[in-house]
Image 1 (cartoon, rainbow, N blue to C red):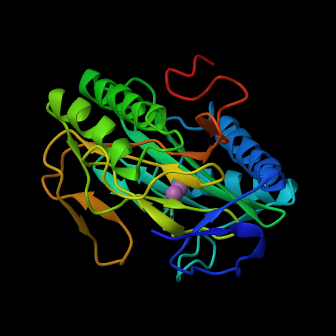
Image 2: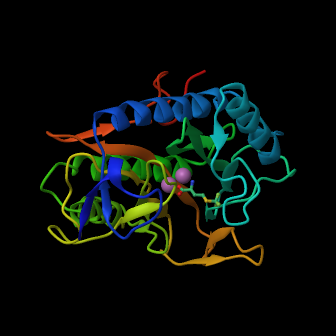
Length: 274
Ligand code: MF3
Ligand code: CO
Ligand code: CO
């Protein structure tokens, strides 16, 4: 894999991994923090009777109030400020008017562009009381993401991230989705490298200080297989088992890793206790 100093690279996907400097870290902290504050704002709003379209509207309003742009609007034909993935929806759920019901769980995925830089993060929101197996899936998924992030340091590889996630998840008799992965980002939404959430230690691209990417494992209670519905976006589990996801945006530092999208309010994972 080739690397390029981001400050002098063209603003497009070049097939090289961009390495960012100090100012870029400052920008990503800003974008990441606002994205996390947006997800914090949703705590207390996600409850029985509320629609995912309403959640989307709250995110859209928050973004505009804070001079940020939701990156998904007009992205490859997508038209909404969030993806809202309910129950067996794996990712890219399209907000709609159907009210959420007690016992549902929903992933809300928000990407905000702040001064040209992308913060990309998602969390799970329980709708009222949820079944124990849904709670367990959410706990395992959050832990899986954090184990993946803990494997990040200069000299490690992208394969080390997946290798930290997969055995942990499979030991709980759950499965890691293969069809979607994390991604480099910065001034671009989706860039090199791909971050696959399964893997072999030492394989893939070597991690270097200044790399920015997401870790965003999707974990299923059943089999890993997904299918995309006729709308061209909504990905669901083939076996209709529940699926959960968390996502953080991170940067590789000289000594390890920095998470840009940590919740200022401590609402990184449920229960949010409000
Ligand atoms: N936010 C998603 C991600 O984590 C991407 C959504 S693209 C969309 O990469 F078009 F579906 F919104
Ligand atoms: Co992402
Ligand atoms: Co996202």
